[in-house]
Image (tube, rainbow, N blue to C red):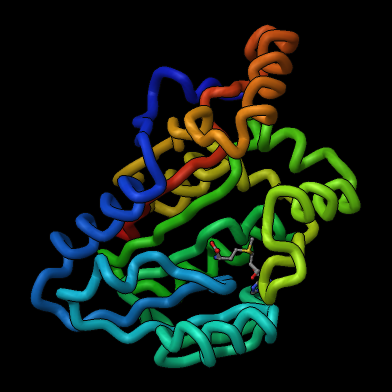
Length: 240
Ligand SMILES: C[S@@+](CC[C@H](N)C(=O)[O-])C[C@H]1O[C@@H](n2cnc3c(N)ncnc32)[C@H](O)[C@@H]1O
């Protein structure tokens, strides 16, 4: 198991993560007109306001037609919506400047195939914004090993189950969906890891205080092999 404790940056809120992503995009592409793909777009995207000074078109693709309908009819923030599978869809080579892929890969049997597709669809110098749960943490480990019905219970008590796009999705956690897996893929693919960040604010959220205490206890019992410092990994990756 790879230790993430010392090497990587931690941010203190979701808002700071979103700001960091937006700042990175604005600084890198200032003055250009961008094509952005939200791969596995679900029901929300927190970048619209932050990227308002940039000229871009946003394409959303997802398997979940209900989630896409919500985006189309309520948020109205997508220029193009595609109901389809990221493993099967065929975009043009070098079509996009930025690909967002947030909490999707852990649900996919064939995650590496999708990363290969991103490589094809991105322009050289393009960015991939990737978020995954970290399987080396207590949270990530349990989302990997618990049966699907348990995710339903979690969603019922902690999330907005029943609303479009909020059904729990089964988890697969292919080997590439981990810190070691992403690092290996990037070195083989010649992608540069521009940022590797953990959500250090996990323990501060009061809603999750019971879960947070339990997570600390489990981490202690596993002699810190399962970490309780965070739940997720955020990557900003650049195609060379
Ligand atoms: C946990 S949700 C995340 C949604 C959104 N990216 C977010 O961060 O809020 C996972 C999304 O991935 C989509 N998804 C799962 N497998 C997919 C696939 N093979 N192709 C396209 N979308 C997929 C699901 O339908 C779901 O909307």
